[in-house]
Structure formats: structure tokens, C-alpha cells
Image 1 (cartoon, rainbow, N blue to C red):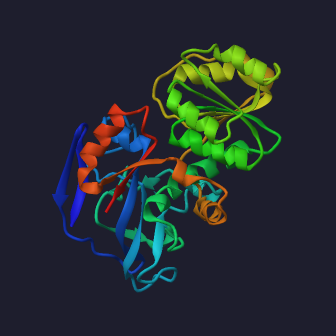
Image 2 (image 1 turned 135 degrees about the vertical axis):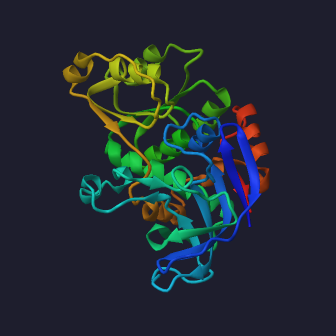
Amino acid sequence: MKAVIVEEPEKISVVEREIPEITANQVLLKVKAAGICGSDVGIYHGKNAFATYPRVVGHEFVGEVVKVGANVKNAIVGDHIAVDPVVSCGHCYACKIGHHNVCQSVNVMGVHRDGGYQEYVAVDQDQLNQISKDIPWEIAATIEPYSIGAQVAHRGRLTSEDTVLICGAGPIGLIILQVAKMKGAKVAILDIVESRLEKAKQMGADLVVNGKTTDIVDAMERFTNGEGFNLIYEATGNVKILQTCIQKLPSQAGRIVVLGFSTVEFPIRQVDIMSKELEIIGTRLNNYRFPEVIHWFKEGKVQPKEIVTNTFHFTDADKAFKYNDENLDKVLKIILTF
């Protein structure tokens, strides 16, 4: 079989590998589609703090079951599956209190272990999520990024009463926008790419702000009538934006959910957090959110077609990554097809 490997930063190769053997608790999945995520791009460029090399990347992938282990009870040959890429130990403190996504030894397919950019993958039965055969593979591959939207909604306690700011109108920001509007919140979204802001407007954003051309603080104060945002999602990874989110944009008792994972240190003032009794909330991966998202897809509550902008055959992954880098104003989500 063929597999796409990031051998080292900036170097992608297509190699031949043996089809993996499965254990009694695994299925063999024939991969049908896989998304390119910002974290995959980070691995490609050597800017992902969690990745190891060489690595078959890809954590947003779906496929068809072609072989089933003897102990597997939740899948049969022919099933269409969305794979939850998060693998945890089940017995550390985080796992015991229901946060398996931040298990002390968490493994993510495509980051810590080989992922979905290969024709066949062995997958543990605990990671399998049944999906309808009516969903096109390219659309089904977006279930994982939508699970991030579900996770951050949970972490931020998002409600219809909230006035929300989303920093970043990339794929994840637009997914969070869809989730926030689905739940009835009032939403502003910030970016510097005009085409992405235009897409956000089309998808129901109540305010779009271009940080290059607009005074952010002034625009946000007017939007919130001077009260600030109850809930802020920082999805750019830009520490200066996070600093502004903490110091100037939240309401009293506001919540700030941090999705970015920059390793850059930056100064913050304790008084800004203490005086408003802010909550600074980390969020990582997803915590068993696939069933919720699959229900959204089934009920038509979200618009996954709106974020899929391009498809490439998986053996052209190098071209896909380069196209992504060179066309930020055109690309939202690239799907690799098999």
C-alpha cells in the first residue's frame, strides 16, 4: 500500500508499506478521505510542538471497514467509519475525571503515531464511530474538525445568551461560528483575510472585523455596547491577540477559551484576570464529541460543505500542502481523496 510520510520538516514522500496487521480489538480500515488541518501544516513546517518524525500525518480521516478483529463488537465489514484520533490510557488522573483528551500519555493518530494519510489503517474499536453511507466521504472527513467545535462549545459553556468573539476565521473559527449560531449566540469574528471574513458573513456572523484595517477594541466595544464579550475563542495562536483578549475585550466574569498552542511567552497582568474574575480555559482535541457531531450532520444543523474548498488525490499531498501555503485567501479545508 501507499503512505504519505513527512520525513522531516518540509519533506513529504509517498512510500510503499505493508498493509498493517490487526489485533483482536481492531479493525482494518480502507481510508477514503482525509483532511488537511492547521496542525498537519505545522508538522509539515516543523512548527508543531507535539509531533515526532518521520510521521504519517492525518488525524481527520474516514474509511470503510475491510477486516474485523475477533473481539470487535461495534463494526462489521462494509461499515463507514469516522475515526476519533485520540488514544488515552484510561487510568491517569485526567482520564479518571473524564478528560481523556488530555491524558498524561495521550496519543493522537497523525501526531504521536501514524495517521490517516495511507491506504489502510489499523484502528482500535474504541475509536470507531459509525456514519451514514449517505454522507459523501469528502464531507465525512470534516467530522473530526467539527468535534473541535463541539468540544470548545462545551469547554466555554456556550449558550444562546452569550455575546461571542471568535479570533480567527479559518476552518476551525468558521466551525465555531456555525456552532455558536446554531445555539443562538450573538457572534463577532476577527481575521485579517478579507475572503474569510466574507465567508463568515455569509455563514451568519453578526459582525466581521478585519484587524488590519479596523481598530479592534473600538469596534468590539461598539458591538457589545461597552460591556465586552462574555465568551472569547482565541483560535489564531497569536499571543498578542490573546493578550488583547485578556486585557481589553472580555466582559465582567467573561470566559476566554484558548485553542492556539504557541510556545511564545508573553506578559499578562494578574489584575486583568482578577478584577473581572475571568476564566482562562484551555481546550485540546475532543473529548468523545463524535456522536454529537454525527447527530448535527444527520439533522443538517451545520454546513460542512461550506468549509471544503479543495480536493487532491492523497499521492499529491505535497502539492496540496504547497497550494494551501500559497492560497490562504482561497483555501479553507483541503480534503485528500483515496
